[in-house]
Image 1 (cartoon, rainbow, N blue to C red):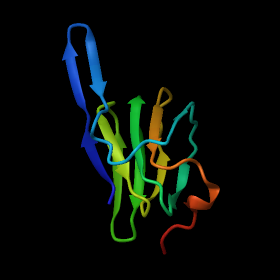
Image 2: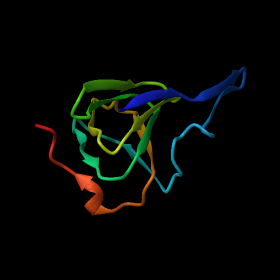
Image 3: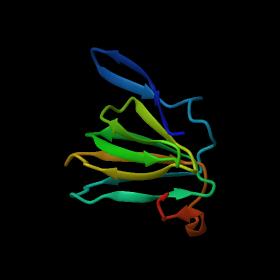
Length: 121
């Protein structure tokens, strides 16, 4: 089931420092980021194996999720919020602000055979 984890952030007069250490529940094999999104909807899939951790490091976006038992929407609007998406989580990313940068860590290398595009009925 998709869920948010809070990333440890240190704040002082110089700014903020967010640490990603020992909180991602998998070994990271791939990192990608999405930015410059217009009104498009991204994603629209789930996976056979891949677990993902999504962080909107700038701006905000919404991730709609369906794991075939529960439908939820997650607002990623702070760089210390990390959404964990399990393989069964069919998800779409949308409502990106113009300045949004969504960074995603993945447990597997890219494999087109790992993608399931059909939503749950």
